[in-house]
Image (cartoon, rainbow over all chains, first blue to last red; front, side):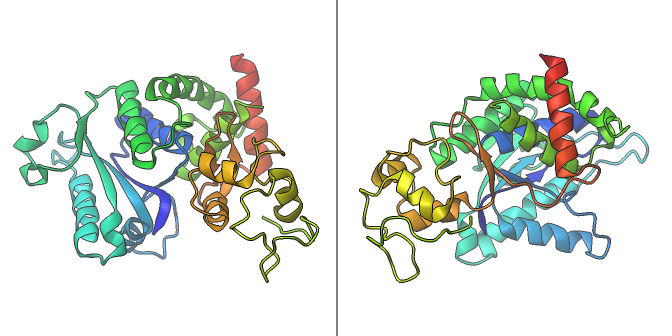
Length: 202
Length: 108
């Protein structure tokens, strides 16, 4: 298990893209390595096996279960986030001694809303971001900083301000390869964010 | 991190050539001769190993070295930024650096 790897379990839909980018950014800015099901495009690996592997390798997990609305096309809700949260909790419970050290942060839109649709997770570390990117960053930054107890990691509001500049720069970065920002892959975003953060000090 | 030959005039060395963890008086500058110029980037060359380990919250030199494996660089405020898993899909490493520099220049 990698002590600095963070499993990101969140929606990948277009309306959550900015939130997803924000999670990647704050995890990297806090000195951690974001991991998610989108990190590897290897079609030879069965998706659920890939998720098992990534969860096993990550000490930390960030789970945003806020998206409960039905898919506009199918009319059905997406169950991947609750499934992956369950897998993470299962790994921690049944995965052996090392895996019991796993830590997770669960995020929802409103406090206590989860009690209406996934009440069994009561007692976990559940925070609300109210759908706001800045609040999401602040919650994650505070949690990660508390986990490692490292005072050098900047506060959530400072990271949120840095993210706004990063987000404004993404169209310019994507355009250098004649891409739109929404065409950037997870691996593109992590490479760009890491370089952006380090370039701030150049 | 590449290990260079020599460093502390042969003093305080384990059999594998690395500096013994118990010598907290070793200086960062001397350790850079062994562990490379990027060892403890952002810290002063005259800093004692014991001070470095305390600031980095590492219980030992080996734990510190393990912790910085996979680090791409260190921010001015001292946060180690990890190397992302795998390479970018659409960019080479140089293209990422150039694109970021361009975007930062435009945004200034």
